[in-house]
Amino acid sequence: MRFRKSVIIPAMVAMLCGLFIGSMSGCASTAQAYKAADGLDETAYVMNQHFLALVREANTLAQSGQLAGTDLAKAQDIVKAARPVLAELSALAQAYTAAQNAETEEALTQAIAAAATQLSSLVNAIRAAGGSAHNGIPGLHFAGFTYFVMEV
Amino acid sequence: MNISLLLDLILGFGVSFFDAQGRSEVSDTLKKLQMAKDAGANVEAHMQRIADALLTDVPLDWESLAAEINSEVDEFLARPT
Image (cartoon, rainbow over all chains, first blue to last red; front, side, top):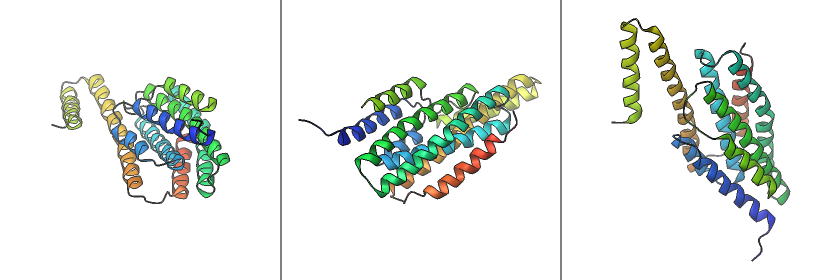
């Protein structure tokens, strides 16, 4: 049996998102939100919500003085780099919702992979600064995730 | 007993105890742990609301989300290092 690429890619993304959710330890609600996402556009929406929650957390940590100096500067660089990636993800998800075809699907799939890498960096930066132990997404999982999706 | 509640009690007691002992370096560390735990709980609470909304098929509000992200990111990037 031969599957079309347009069928394989979303299936791969779904499977890899599952792996990524599985790699998060001690964050039941975050994992639940990703599981509740139905389709690529909702996955993109959850990723944007996750980004919002993480930046809010970074603000909280900076406010309390836990994230300061070079750690704060590093986190700011990561957020600065992640912002356009997440914005593009949002635009592509809306384009995909408006017109679901192979082209919008592939663009969105790649944007999800790119956003996953950015979220991973942000989580790691927050954790390195002594932030909470939740959302323990090893960067390696995301590197593999990105590579795998791009290769499909 | 809920593990999270137990941890709250231990941290709360630890902060008061070491403050009373004059061991401010220990109580400061415990306060930081407490704040980190609270921040993590905030992310989890946020993501739980998203999970609940998705399960009830509430339409995705991309505009409000973009506005919230922009506001939060602007605030964060404006913080002096």
